[in-house]
Amino acid sequence: MTRLTRLWLVWIAFSSAGAAFASVPDTHTAASLQAKYASLGDRLQHNPFQRALSLDSSESSGELKGDIYARVDYPFATVSKALNDPAHWCDVMILHINTKFCRATTEAAQTVLSVNIGKKTPQSIEDAYPIDFAYRVKTATANYLEIQLNAQEGPLSTRNYRIQLRAVPIENGRTFLHLTYSYDYGMAGRLAMKTYLATIGSGKVGFTLTGTHANGQPEHIGGMRGVVERNTMRYYLAIDAYLGALATPPPRQLQKRLQGWFASTEQYPRQLREVTRTAYLEMKRDEYLRQQTTR
Image (cartoon, rainbow, N blue to C red; front, side, top):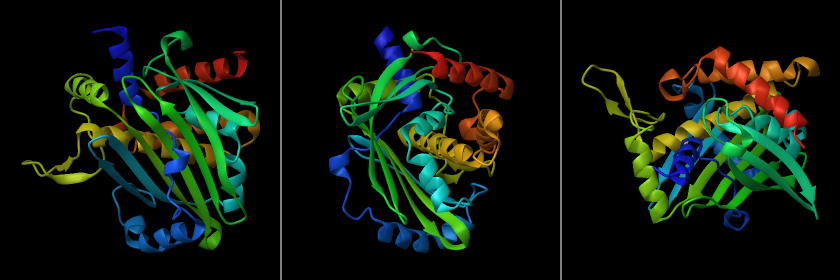
């Protein structure tokens, strides 16, 4: 197995994404998101996630996509201020177990998040895969926030890596979020996906229920939709952990975020358990320090 293929297998496991600006439909507005919130009332109340959350995924011949809709107990003004800042997004992304580094820079009116992704264990930046996300605040008003991240190209014919976050205020001082996560792939990417699913990705599942095993246990979706669902959830839990730590005094916010992200992933051990709490906390403290001190 070549080094490029190994990097690609790690890349699939992480499945970083962004949002292609031209492909965003005009229906992505505050009104459409408010309407979606109204339509999801029952799913937000009754679901297996132990929180007000709905998750969907799709797979076509050349695209993988995950969508999470969630109600969070934070005021919209707090959410908008926190996430309308590229540096804060690096604090979010570093919580993901595969993120090794993130740096936000602005040049010629363009903001870029330089991210390195890699293994679920400690790793040098040089050995992790670099990708640059263009960061764009599409809309930021008193009633609607839309943030887009875009990476046009990835390894082995992958392209259009997308992350999009939308938010609106709802009743009782809360906020409704929509996180979209997807990427496109070609033949080389398809072959690499098959290799991943036959090796380090074998036996892993997502969240969508597809049936019941003979022993009565629930059966969850596998394959690449499973990959998309796991990582969509990891991103969402990182956003939630970041928001949940904002009320903590600044010197203790990092620890609060790390503890919050890991505790949330442990609610879904079948899908998200990878390392021990101690291993995760030690690795992430070191990576966060590296993120703050590397020039």
